Each structure stands twice: as structure tokens, then as C-alpha cells.
Image (cartoon, rainbow, N blue to C red):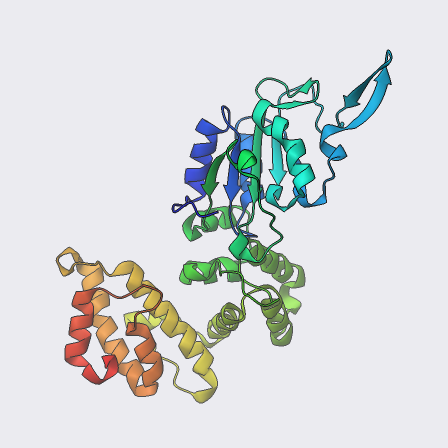
Length: 348
């Protein structure tokens, strides 16, 4: 499914409030991005219990029920989990992972809120969700008839909103602090090979493990946990972040002039993490137009040029990484012009 537009968590909740009561909604998104928890949050916000069915584990009789003879005629008895007397939110998770036979069983349920002779109570809401084909997950083609019965929306990860939730849930400070510095590491596209990759779910899992170990966590175990739940690049940067905590090479202190870039060979991973975090801060804080600079960003721009120059003396490759274009993310043109003027060899 290629919708051409996606929404964040807040936007999706707003859409569900307005659309889900009148039409079935299907949420597309990568595994671990938070589709299930968001539907549960929505159901709680409208005062409805949430009943979840996992499409990949259903057979047709799990939806339409089993036949029973009553007064010389047969009738289907719907499953107890679906046949409720009070309105509820029915969440069909991994709907596009179920077989064609199960999808057929969903037709009347999605379109008419009906299974045989049983009708969902008035006020009930039906929401489906599934992964995308490009996510290397279990996905089967949905029929055009089923697709046409639902409103479709794609959910994307939003670091700011996830952090607000993470602080509320009291996730481990290592995780929240790291994502605060590297919001671009909250989610990574699923790899082509079978290996862990970063999602909001995997960061939550890492937080649970870190809290379970507590103070007895050693460096080797931390490495095992990080590489067992995150993308390898993110795991390496996360370990560098934890190392720089003990070394006290904090980026804010470096920018203020209270500390310097780590220059020892054994601290190269810490240097790389700090440089990447420095680049992320410049991308976030520096305005696209120089006229919009204020006192704080003027100081940042001034210090940034000096710090990039200092960084180039330690490792020119890492300094080039700070100012290079990456995944359509470039520093403001006016800032790059000043870098070219002051450090032409670095940019070339």
C-alpha cells in the first residue's frame, strides 16, 4: 500500500475520533511502530473496551462461529469474544496477514458490523491494522473489495510524541536521553536480512531489560542487550553514548567551551557519537535563513565553526560527516557557505 502521505500519533488519534465511529479504519505501518497501543489508547479515550483479534492466527470459524441446529434449521453461533451485548472497539490486528478465507469472513463484519444474524451493538467501532509489504513482515494481498470497505491511513514514528509517552511511562533514562539526542534513531527501516532493528517497541524492550538489570549491568551485558534489540549502527552509537556518560564528554559542555572533543584513539566511538549528535543539533536548531538567527543560534553558529575546525584536526573524516549531505538532510546553505570560506578543504 502506497498512500503518498502519512500521519503521526496525534494526527491519527484525531482522525480516529472523527472517522472510526462512522467508517471502518485500516492503519498501515511498520512493525513495532505503536499501532496496537495507539488503538488501545483511542478505545480508552472514547470509553469503549478494546477486543483484539490477531489475523495471522485466525481461522474462518473464529469469525463466523460454528453451526448449530435450532428448530430444524441451522444457525451460526458467533464466538464469545465477538458476541458482546455492549458496544466495544473491535481491533483486527495483522488483518492483511490472514488467509483469503479469513479475509472473506471479515467482509460483512467490516462493512455491516454483522456476522450472520449477530449484529455488533450500536456504537461499536471496527479498526484494522497491518504491516506494509516493504517491511519484510508476513503480508498477504488484500482483495480490492476488502480494501474498498475501509478508510486507509499510514502511521509514522514521531520522536517528540514518543518521548512524551516514554517519560510518562518512566522508561529507563538511558533510552529517553539517547532518543532525545538522536531522535532519528527511534526507528530504522526493516533490514533485508534477519537481524534486529530499531523501533519504538525495541527501545521499550531495551528499557525494560535495563531496568531489570539495574545497577549490576556491566559493559559486556549492555553490549549484548543493545545489539540484541537495535539496529547494529544504533546499538554502537547507544554504547558510545553510555560510555561518554562516564567520561563526562557531554555535548552541551563542549558547545559551551567547558570541555573538548575526546581525542584519544580508544575514545573514537565516543567522538563519532558526539559528532553525530552535534550534526543532529545543528540540523534542528539552525534556521534555514540567516535572517532568522537569534542570540542563541548566533552563538551556536559561531561555536559550531570553531568546533568543526577543532574536530577536523582530530579526525577530518568525522568532521566531514558533520557537514555532509545525508538522506536529503543538509545544513543551511548560508552556514555551508561560511564553512566553505573558512574550511574549503573540509567541504571538498
